[in-house]
Length: 155
Length: 347
Image 1 (tube, one colour):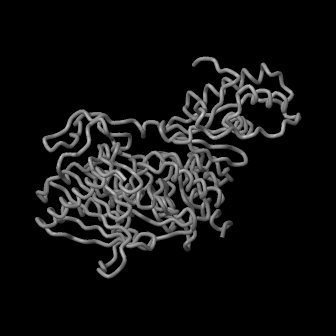
Image 2 (tube, helix red, strand yellow; image 1 turned 90 degrees about the vertical axis):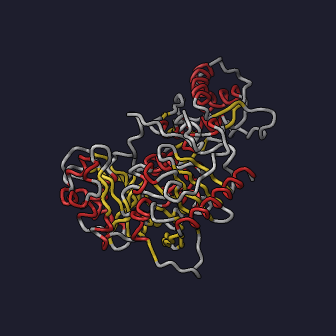
Image 3 (cartoon, chains in turn green, cyan; image 1 turned 180 degrees about the horizontal axis):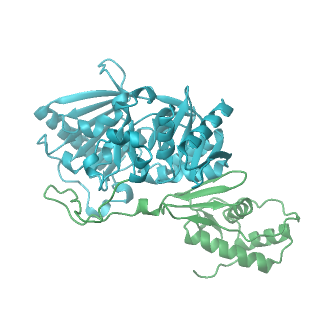
């Protein structure tokens, strides 16, 4: 993936992604890929900032101030996180037709050290979305079942 | 609305009427979550496939009673009613058998892969069509949870949801037992059945996510060989003893423990079993988010469409009830004892 730039904006890929936030953990699912995700609270907060529509550079500056961390450190970690979010198709680049950016929360320096945001990825459901190719149809025009040893064993 | 989707639904309905004209219609009413579902089968050929697992839900057909959903069921081989070729191309098949261009807010169309059944649903008319070319192509597992796709679509605009889970309880108070395939749902549910619990299912149940109730859909249990070995008393009950090389053992519990098959249980908790390999069992609190990760993905990705709604409904459920991990030991008495203790504390 190409490097990210400070003026890029992102939004949640709302068509396929559902996010459920709980106090101790946020769970997300990508309905198109069959993958689901877990984020700890600070990573979920980073996801919220990234998908606010604000330029990535402003998000980096915000996090650096809040956590008292060097911008370079935050930028490196946040860009890696965003690249993973893009690769997992959880976020997409925001365009001119998207909703205006949400304001960032007040930027106040805090005591919490900066921790690189992480995305835990679960892919054990992916097989359920694998497309069984329709190789052939029978003389009625309907798909013919492949009579092969690899036929589904059942749930 | 997709005109082509509606046109195909109407075509399939007309072919069903041809089948009925040829072999007659046999109606069965099922009472599910207080709603009457009417199955209209063209001839008897598919009744074993669709009716046996739901015998406990059958009620007398009442022509005057309101019907929430009518399902027209037929095959071509035994009725002679030929379904026309599909009006879509081979490129239109999508994951889970949904047909591109034939699904919208009103009409749902699926050719279920591996099952070779066409499911059609018209939300406006509360009507569905279930068609297969021949009863012989229906795989062994379909009769253990028939109609779940159509029920899934019919529940889309309600708090109800077919859910990949088991459910057991005492005196009407129960727990939803959930987890991925192989997590211990069936072992836990059947251990509870043996211990005298009320039983509402081990694999797919219907959950009212708002009222926090679970309804029994199917009286079946499907057992892997290693699970079967832990329930030797069920060996004589196995319905398919000659096919266990290729199939899980199927038991129709309605035939053997009818008094324990209950139509509904209150959901007092969501329980996620994990197999420890140690002798004893214990129940420990589990976060709602962890319970959601055990409960939601399989249901979300098993069933076609409405993934967002499924995830949201199940999220609401795990927020509303306490969730627990059942660290299930090797002694099944300990498993049921731990759940009895939990139900006692929650009541």
